[in-house]
Length: 147
Image (cartoon, rainbow, N blue to C red):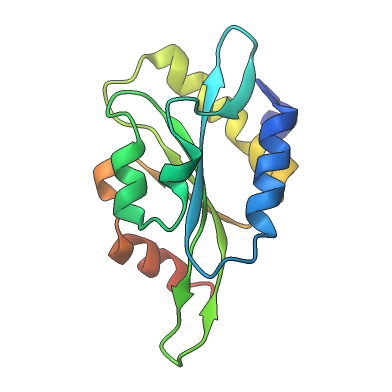
């Protein structure tokens, strides 16, 4: 039953932005930071994060864009350099829910996560308790299982 629960809808502009991220041709990493508009009960692109800040970014750069006491979702197209020399661009969904968040916000984000993942077709889904943990080493370790 919990799989059918959908707390928040996905904003159409955000859906288009995520589609553009998925099919981008650039050879660098890029991200879209998402938040929930609690009044509209909609997942939107975080207006506090400028689009220019999310191009050619490392995981550490993305972590610096995230608030320390509010949950966020991140769609991250990562330029993953494999040990054999190949480069792939996995699209990762990262849910960051720092300690100290309001319980209502944590519930809203947790309840909306599966809907966003399903609607956008993410296959690499990760969770963090702190934005500080979002590092290149952490992401490479997580992606190593997908090869």
